[in-house]
Every structure is written in structure tokens, then in C-alpha cells.
Length: 563
Image (cartoon, rainbow, N blue to C red; front, side, top):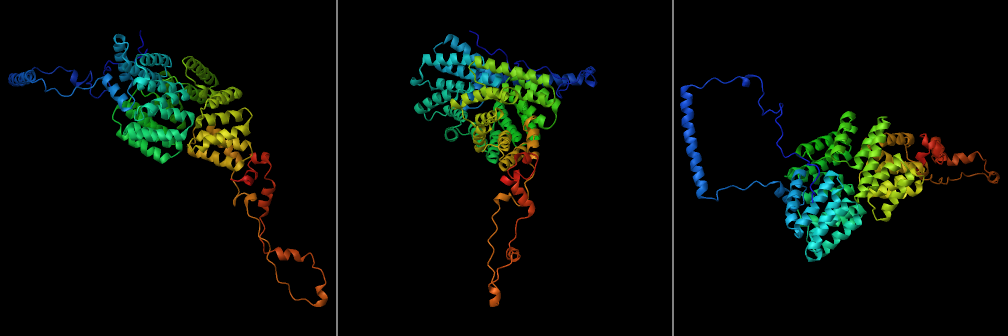
């Protein structure tokens, strides 16, 4: 049975020499002229040197024959490198991963009951499918892992096959199944470090931040080094602890040694820079990741995103197209379609959206649930009601991450259920993650509900966090913020403390005949004059606070409800 990858990610042949290579001599110029014939003296010197060199080589050969233990350490091959990366919990390069798959395939053909080899093969298929976006390999992974468990059940020590099934479930976005497989392994082998990365992914997908934090901490105790640093950086990022995430991610990049591991660490730095609104830094990190490992295609998409922010549109389009060619993920098709739409290229946008639907349908046939990205597309470019149904199903299935909460809140708003959407949008923002899109969605929902002060704060946070977070949504965020206007000085009128009561004034002594006369009305203002009343402008603003139509035009209404 042929289960090798259908495409070799990197050619095994050495590259052809390029004329621009500084170590390749040019075909024309001084070196193209044949050298003059050697003189007699030069010939004799060369002969003498050759005799000495031959003697040295012969002596070395005799020593090598007499003592077979003089060889240096053998350079590890691609299979050994892939196995070492897997053992360390680090990603392997695509070429090494391909070699490992081929090696295990040949072995299990003649050893069909070798459970560990079948588990390794199945897990390698999962990683290949994830890194290449070829979802057809998930079925092959499931077959290999089931064969491994048939040869040796998990209860009899085949925990790695269970870990492989957990990784497969995560890749298919079935986080409940991944949690069940992972917790089964953890219960039997609590010190097996390999189960904790899949548990972290499962808990994160389910929105169980407490369990994800505990699993990350346990993983760091059992497996120190770059993998633990990478997971810790992701944890900090999810909590919104930006400085801690950056410091930990930099340490992981500094300590990474293998190309694939280094590229992953550099890609993480690029993502963090992008989220901070620093596209130049993001492009530099993504370029460094691609130079380190040309097969890290996710960095192509990250670079394209940052190039859009820098208004280098032609380069961004080319990068997106290459990324989709190498790594056809629905999310990248959505991003490219929105870029086309922002440029007024509606035909190209529709083409990308059609490709997105095709990718989602193909993934569904292979057991992969891409409801989240499809719902995001439907909410903004298709049927918001359909997006709500997709995301409600995710929520019922306990997929309650910040990403799902944000998408459901926005879809409800777009479907005309803004009040219900507010609950989910707040939940996404309350995780603390610094995501400009989350802040934008929450701000727009609050503005629709006439909650102008919080709306202004969240819209300001969106444009401050990343002014170019989306080619379509970022300009809308700025427009919404401009429509709200600036809050008036001194704070909202309805939040100002009431004026203190006037202090009683001592009454002047009066003659008996004047004591019976009532006070003239004109004396009342003189008694209250020391009390400073609000300025007329503030009173006017407070009186008009409940007019949302005027607030939309930047009047005093937004200011009257808080900043």
C-alpha cells in the first residue's frame, strides 16, 4: 500500500549552481583564459609534493585498517533527525518528516504487528497533514494508529498510539475527543511528558484556560528547553501578558538549534510583532523564519499580512498566492479575498471566497471541522444567520475559546441580535488577549447599544493595538471612532457630583416692625450665589444625553454615558 506523501516538500537533489552564487566562478572573464604550461621547476615541485601526500594517505589508510575504532561520530541522517526532533517534542523539517514516513512504511510492510512503529507512522502522518494542509492524510493516520492499538492495546503500554489519536483529534478540531484520549494517557502515565502538548491544545480549543495553564506548567516541569518555552510563550500570549510572552519567545528562539525548531520560534516572534502593530518587525521575523527553513510556509502568510499593513500590496498578493499554493488553508483564502475586496477587485474576491468554500467542504469529508473560519466568512460576506447556527453548534460542543466567543458575538450582531451578541463579545475580550479584532467587534456592538463610553474605549484599543489589523475592518474601526467624537472635558455630566447645599447665612438684626415682613424673592439668588453651578454647556450636554442619533454624529450624547 502506497501511503507516501504525494508531493516531496523539498528536493533531495542539490540545487543547480546559480550564476549569482559568489562561490561559483563566472564563465567569462580572466578565468576563461587557459593557464600557461607549467615550468620544469614547477613540475618537479608538484611531483615531490605528490609523493609526500601519497605517503601520508597510505599511512592513514594502514592506521584505519589496523584500528577500526578511529572513526568520528556519524552524521545523523534525515530519519534520525526526525526521530530526535520527535523525541525532544520539537517540529521536524518537512524533508526529514518525509524520510521518516518512508522508513516506517518499509518497516511495517515486513513487520505489520510492530505497534511502536505503527504509532510513529500514524503520528508522522498527522504532522505531515497539519504542516501541508493535505487533510487526506488524516485518514491514513487514523488507520495506522488503529492498527497499532490492535497489535498492542493502550492499556498494555501503547500510550503513544493514544497520544497520536489525541493529536489527530486536535488537528480535526475535535477537542473533546482529544481531551478524552489525552486524559486517559495522563491517568495511566502522569509523568509521560508527550501527552501534555496535546492536552494543552485540547484545553485551549475548549476554552478551559485553567486546565491549559496547569498542563503548560506540568509540561515545563517534565520537559525543559525550547518546547516548554514555546508553550509558555503561547500561554502568556493567550492571557494578554505581552511583555512576558515576548521575553519567553525570544529565549526560545535564542536556544533553538534545529532549523525547523528555529523557524517555528521566529514565526512566533513575527506573530507577536504583528499583534503589537509593528509590521516592519513582523516582516523581518517572518523572513528570518523562511531563510532558516524554506518549508515553513505559514510564515509566507504571516509576511503577506504584514506587507498589507505596510501598503506593499503587490508583494502581499504574491506572498498570499505562494502561501496558498504551498499551504492551502481556508483562513488564508479568506484573508486574500478580503484584500482583493479592499482593493475593489470584487471578481478576484469572489474567486477566493469560492475556493474557501471548496476547501472547507473537502476538509469536512476528511473529518476536519472548519466551522469557525466558514462562520467568519458568512458573518461578513455571506449569510450571518448561517454563521450563527454554525457557531451555536460549536458552543454546544463545548468549543468555547476566545476565538469562538468573538465570532459568535459578531455573527449575532450581524444577524440583528446585538444584545445577545454582547455577552459573547465581552467574554472574548475578558480573556485579556490583545486582539484588535476582538476589541473592534465589542466596540461596534456597544456603540449599536448606545453604550458610547465603553464603545469609544474599545474602538480606541483596536486602532491603538494594531491600526492595520484588517484591510476591511480597520478603516471601519477608525470611522466608528471618529463618529463617536472626543469626550467633553471634565467627564460626563451625569457622573459629576451634585453641588453641595448652600451654607446658612446669619440673619442681620432687624427692627421689630421689619421682622414681620416676608423676604423678597430677589434675595434668594444672593443666598445661593456662592454655590458654583455647572456651566451651561455641561447642562445642555446632560440634557441631550439620551439622543443616540445625535451621538452618532459626534454630539454630546456619547459623553453623557461615560468614556
